[in-house]
Image (cartoon, rainbow, N blue to C red):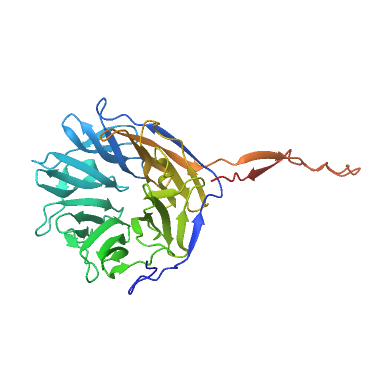
Length: 379
């Protein structure tokens, strides 16, 4: 176990726990696939409510862009390729992912949901895919054959390697923010270590959450907050523990009362986190959300009782969220909705009786009631 390594970035190696000091509400609706009885799997959502992911179309399983009005755009693959997949969308509507066929795949961008553009290549690498794009145009991705991670600086426009720390053999990048700061994990000294990276400073290993090992970052927002998880094998299936690393407050564990396991998928700039919770004996994962600003947390009803997993994958700054359910090996549904703080309970607070009028004095107008917000404390 390590709580810090040589050269680790300076962070507060302390931990607090967000269990939920209030309630959240979530309302979700299943979205129709592009073709009847087809599969639709949503991966990301932007502030305009545009959703991207992968779905069945008449021409095969391809990436999609769904506008807030429900209109689908098929994100077709490059010429000669047979499949495509969309992974991330920014607030300009630019989508990144991959396009592939037999024996190879390319990292691509669909600018504004238009035709695909190959982002470039790396020597000796046949499988490239993009995983994230920021509003400022930074793009990151991974290369399967050579186990490398790469980036594109919007001011340069070419695919470049994310140089790992000395001795590393595998680098996997997960996300990047508008400042060009990326997070992921690197395999060094026979273990995976979390890292943070930018062009000027290179790669720096992160300290682990106190008492933990194997922290894997999954997202970073523009406030510099990093979400991720730790996995510990506890028979029969193991337990995930969710954390957010704040530049000022250190690590915070994210939990929901009544659940042993928690996993964060999405993180917004406004402090929303979404993912899932479950218990070892549960038949399905349960969609969940956390509000870092208010310290609220909640698990929501299952999207589908027949599914073995129900998860929220991404969230935007206003709490708009996209989630999925899986039923069987190849049947996925997508749900679109909103997470928000539960409206406060309004109660009438009786006023003291007004004083007796003074002869000759003008009466004073008084309000009929005082409304107080009563917090609702739940897990």
